[in-house]
Image (cartoon, rainbow, N blue to C red; front, side):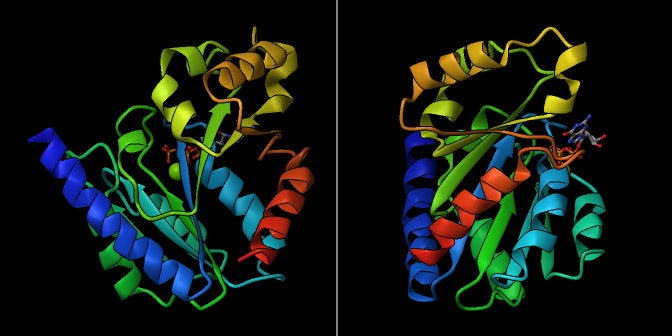
Length: 212
Ligand SMILES: Nc1nc2c(ncn2[C@@H]2O[C@H](COP(=O)(O)OP(=O)(O)OP(=O)(O)O)[C@@H](O)[C@H]2O)c(=O)[nH]1
Ligand SMILES: [Mg+2]
């Protein structure tokens, strides 16, 4: 049964991927525990990126329109997907959301997954890159405890570095744990609150956008 669901999802994810590639859309899937700062980072990134490329957003949450409202305030196209009791987005939800919104050719599509470090790792959405965010209030052992997510990710962002002086979190150890699970990870350290470190991540992403 589980195999069947994942296989169906993978087939649709490949269709999404083909559609994104044909239209020059770079799709990013943002993943993290609840509250690590996915929406806050998007709020920081979008004003910097929209000068370079059109940006649109798909917001995934079990309930509420709150994250979509935060993104809507920035004036970019956004669709909220509520998963109800579901703990992750799937490829069919992305397929439907993309039909509902105006995703421009050559644009950046940011997908904010449901806050959860477990199930969203298993569901390919057709994205080009998985970006996992871990924040300094979560404990530096998380990559070892939830290895599937870090193994599947292409980029790992350590957020809330402004809190490092106040929390018992070893950033170097966290990086070492993440790299032990997946040595291909691109690693960034930043604060979505103060903006520190955001520029380095933006430079990397802009270079990636040029390759699409
Ligand atoms: N100090 C500090 N707080 C932050 C930072 N980034 C986000 N926050 C705060 O963390 C809380 C959660 O941020 P969100 O951006 O809503 O987190 P999220 O990952 O989108 O949460 P869900 O969508 O519910 O999973 C908010 O109170 C933010 O203000 C940061 O870099 N530093
Ligand atoms: Mg959010």
